[in-house]
Image (cartoon, rainbow, N blue to C red; front, side):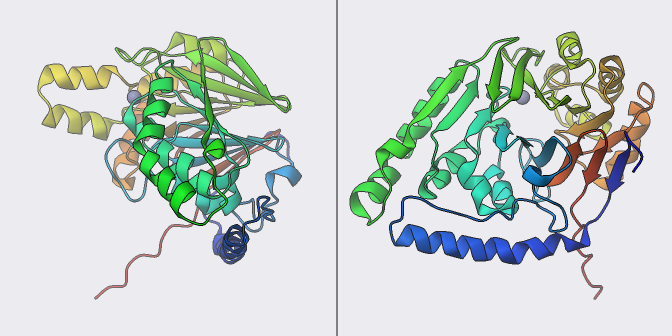
Length: 356
Ligand SMILES: [Zn+2]
């Protein structure tokens, strides 16, 4: 195999083969909860793609799965912002937008149960609205570790209110129903982060990067390093020199983008000062290209966009003004394995509807 390749596999026909064992495991898990076992053992169907080894056996030190790549606008093809990074048996979730729990379940029930480290880039609702689902549904699955949130200081208020908002559900499940659930299992922690803070999990290092989300302060990106490889997640930001500074030499950068199509939509539908304000929150495609170039990343990936195929050519064309390197447009459940090589795999496209 040639080293330092970037391969893109557009479609994996074997994806569905993973579905059946996943559902079988789900049934087994439900039975175990029903009989009150406190320890749940779920064999791993831990690769989205049945012909790929799970991360623990992978030749790639880091696996990134784009769980949600969309914008605040509901879109059944693209759920809200959520990115899963796996390395050395550690699962790290970056943001928890709409549908996050669904997408984790797509990877296997153990992903929803075992994902408990959550890094928040900022507190816009499209990055956090999936937290109650992850928090409470993971609890009903007997999540063995408490949820650990990292993010802006106000995340403490967010979690306190989520806990209170669902207290009646807790009363039902703990006090009224027959179950093994307890309030103790709903404990959580919130760690306030700031620029340069580092966290380590089984040798996997996360570095906090202050970015520029216009009037939204603080806002963060994160860099994950493991085994000599790395991925950077921009979070929501305008062009950020601090992000570039922390991203030097990273393998892959996932960056938000204010695509030409979205900018046109905003300017056509909002009064000018409001449209200017929305656009200032984000990064235009040529500026994302500058960030990729100035960081020196091996692969740039767009997220936080409407990836409608009709809008992609203009996005690519604008990005190519400043970035000639490898470039991918993110989609939900896209997997990026990072090592000496970088391999991008996309889920199969749904079959076109039959003609009438
Ligand atoms: Zn935002």
